Length: 279
Image (cartoon, rainbow, N blue to C red):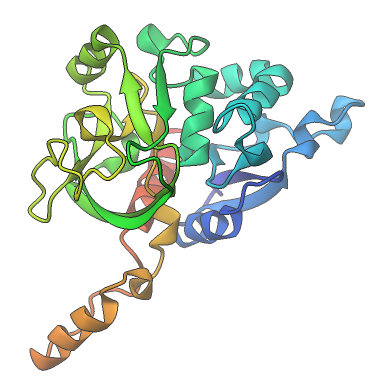
């Protein structure tokens, strides 16, 4: 079986790279963690890591460059300056890009999302400070848009994932917001325990995102950005209620179906897509 090669960028405050690498491996990919300096170092191209060798690019969570000038701003600037042409070719080749938390913020600043009319250079939306003004670390319920073109959420309707960020409020001008909604580019929305939209209720939409948006994709569905952390739910025991749920199953004489956390489904959908379409 041919390898689905995945690249996880590390360095300068990105701190979820090991979990992301592990999650991609569980999903069936052959991942590699690469420090961003291997892309942006000066010298001959032979000494640099090239994106063309990979099928999936993941920008993970953390606080790249300490979020100086805004979350993901400097990371986006570095990527645009040193990898702009490679990123464009990577996208044109039908390969996949995922941005998680700080990575989502970088994709927005780059213009890779929402990328109206597949214009990947224009910034149109923002991820700004949480309405509470505080850093948030909790678990959220998410509703998944089945009409979205995203290849990462095939067959999924709801999921519960953790969030941990200070700048996660999704914001867009009314015209752009309407366009995102009409194009079904909204992939994840904050929801209640029943999977119904949060409708701005703080207990379910803790950062105050407009339209309860937690993640969006580009028009092709090949680029995904989301604030929640799927890599942080890679094992059954990551969930804060795992002991309670396992006790319920024990009393019913049931068994845990799988020790793999639900977050892996998102990565696996991406890996399967590459295997089915590009390999």
